[in-house]
Image (cartoon, rainbow, N blue to C red; front, side):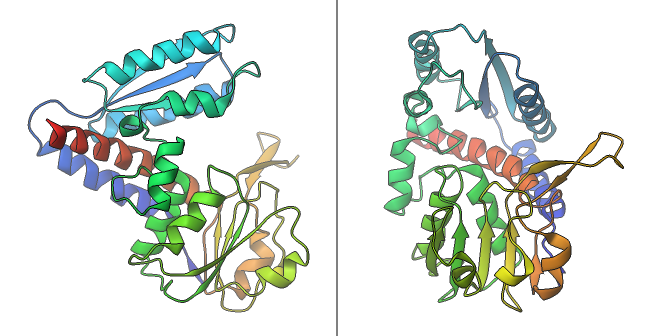
Length: 292
């Protein structure tokens, strides 16, 4: 069984970006993070992304607003950033306050600065296999993991467990493309799928992104499958100093002996997500240079 090491791969990607930017002339890429309120998880995630940006030579800016900001005011702030030529990427940290419509907010970000890949324009470009599409960072991280481990996908049956706009749907689209490390037959399953285990057992490659701790059990995976675990779930653990531990959507201990390869949690796809955000920001910067 091979471990798909997201830590190692993410470090490689970040080192490549750092080297590219050290050798580049002129203004460096700039990404602006927007955070609403003081949700501890959002504060942590944005701080982590800013640290990674600084590490590789990407300028990052942070705009924070109270939870009382109206959707119209927030959209006006985003429009100002759309017009700012010094800003190449814009990321609105989810979740947003309940009085806001996330889809509308994400679609306010200019497609060429949508480094999160959540806008309808970039999802449409992905469907059309447009190379300028920005792909959501988690599925892009999965695809990069597959590429760097040289995992054969051509003609393989990939089962995606989960249908979210953030992971499941774009992941399915990525592996259906007519492209290297794609050309797969893709099945998308979800919480309403009948005979779920029967379908997941058909997978040559199983991508678990259903958001339920250790949901994928040993009987759901065929021998020799490749399993990519996207889940990040907190479960109580009185033996831990923190009182909890992080697990994926796959019961790693039970499933891993059956696999040809599997990604761990933590240390897998999560780290790839941040690395691909940096990649998307550099891509946005390069495309902006080409338009000048």
